[in-house]
Length: 183
Length: 316
Image 1 (cartoon, each protein chain N blue to C red):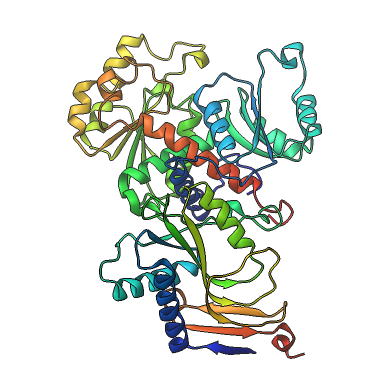
Image 2 (cartoon, rainbow over the protein chains, first blue to last red; image 1 turned 90 degrees about the vertical axis):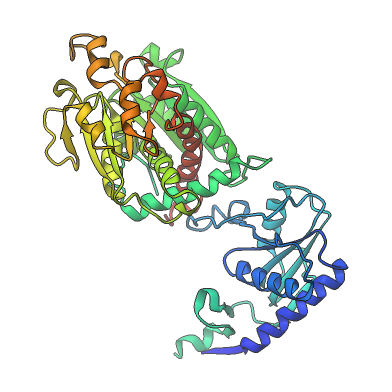
């Protein structure tokens, strides 16, 4: 049984708040780059980017990009081969403030891989992290700067983020394996 | 993917999958740090029993950009010249912990033998075996064509409806064989044009149209004109009267290039015999993709090595 924890309006409100928080902490939109981590970080980054441009009309149009972490993962050799996603950086990240955007923050390993990937692209002035859901269970010393919702979860539960761009609807659901089978 | 031995057995989804990964790899080549850590700690052996410049350095560059360790082995100056068998060489490489073996061999089927032998557990990439196949060359040719045809929107697409004419020494060409199978899988229409002596005796089952007249083929204005190298080192008989006559009838001269029109592309797998199968004017014209093919080669080989070596070998 999946339980819905965030609905469309909740997600929209959370992303609007995050957009304001990013602008506040960066003191405007100068030298700001949002990089979404495929797959679901990319549409979230685009939504935050659209919010920021709505709030700050002077914001650079080259605000949003994507950063694939597949090649930098530490579990490449343990899982079946995965096709890499796309990296596209809208402008040079040297000296910029990069905000990494992902849907769920869990072990922190994806973010570690993203930091390594950033290293090969340039030297940002600062790197921040924005996530829609922080579910805990970190395995590395990594935390998010901007969080849509803190969602305490059991380790074996599944958090599903569904976004209208990819899945046809906006929702965050939580699924626990014990109820799943109904045995 | 366990091995890459032929393009004949490659299905459309797998082929497009390799080309799409190659697109991502091509993006890496434009960055300041042209390196990915994906294959750190893996060892790739270039096992070359036959001379090669671009294929070997292309595989070497590809493996190094993925952070793999590369060992180059060429038969000249090795124990092979003392008579060591393929089996013993393979077992030596296995004992050294090779994760992938990129193999070129003058005997058709040698990589298949190695892959099916049980002598070595590594993934095998065929980098050209005799007159049989050269799958990464066909993949890089397809990648180059797709890039010229669709540009930025290449991802996920095949080569449907593209008309490709392959001209020259088809008989000895592993490039032609691999291209015929792959291009057909990707939906292109292939025409082979050559002197009758330079075509294989039995062409039944080849998904291609056969022609003998280059002028007629040029007037068809194909989208792609791929010139093959005359492989003098494999020619132990007289296949055509002399080089000048070959050039006159089957060489891509400046005049034929002009009739092809703009927007059509001219390919050559290299190394070129300038003045024999391709004129300098054609080789250096804006239609020519010879240098793009070399750049694509690194991206495609990175994709192949990545798909072969990353991930759990058991789970694949």
